[in-house]
Image 1 (cartoon, one colour):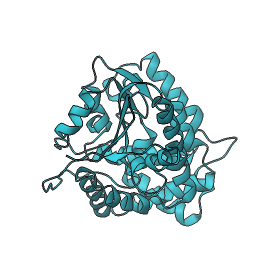
Image 2 (tube, one colour; image 1 turned 45 degrees about the vertical axis):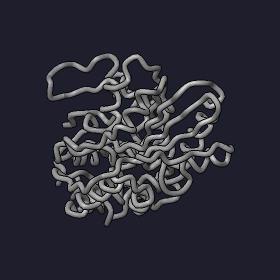
Image 3 (spheres, one colour; image 1 turned 30 degrees about the horizontal axis):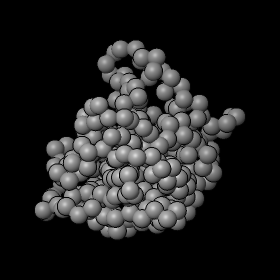
Image 4 (tube, one colour; image 1 turned 90 degrees about the horizontal axis):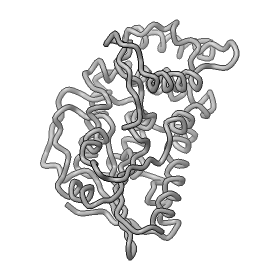
Length: 311
């Protein structure tokens, strides 16, 4: 049913209820935003990414490529090179690594006891959910035992695949091909990422799912929002991107769990890393570097100033 397993909770959180179109107008982009923090012997770059992009989009600026090339260490949200993906359409059995990941997702995503997802919904939300699942050609009964956050990711993934996109078109996958010989690190494990959503209150999970369903009911609007997001990102308009993301993620509990808390933890990681010499290139979802309670904000609280790199 699904060609690829979900490999990054942040990827889907960033795209919220917005998905790509087959075309994207470009008007002399200045380039995605890049920041830098420095002291006497340490340089740390912060690059905001979009995890899923239209195929063939020219976004890699020479300044970004040079910053990456100059770095000793590449850091991402999770180590995507360690995520085994499984394609059921291939007819092959999943590898042990893929099975381990599938089992992890299932253990976190299954509702407790004898709960049913549709029984947790209001009559109105249930009707909208069933209609959206039918439109996406997903068997609604097969997902009754799963938590709302997981079903939301599946619906998002299915929508993106129907449009011909998957995470392999994202920025991190391009950067992965450019880091041979560099030390690699990750800010989180896959289990941690999925756990952020799994620990959300069930009411917030239902709101998260319902917000997505409302977007799926208007595919023209979905296309427009995603175009806006990518346009703001590729032009380096961090504030414009933040405005769109904030509109898509208006539950303060969800915002706190998905963005604020993680940004604060990442700032702590960067603070510790500043005590070691070297050059580091950190690539994380652009939503973590724009808006309120950004990584840069939490770094400033620790006395670490960041500057925007000009192209």
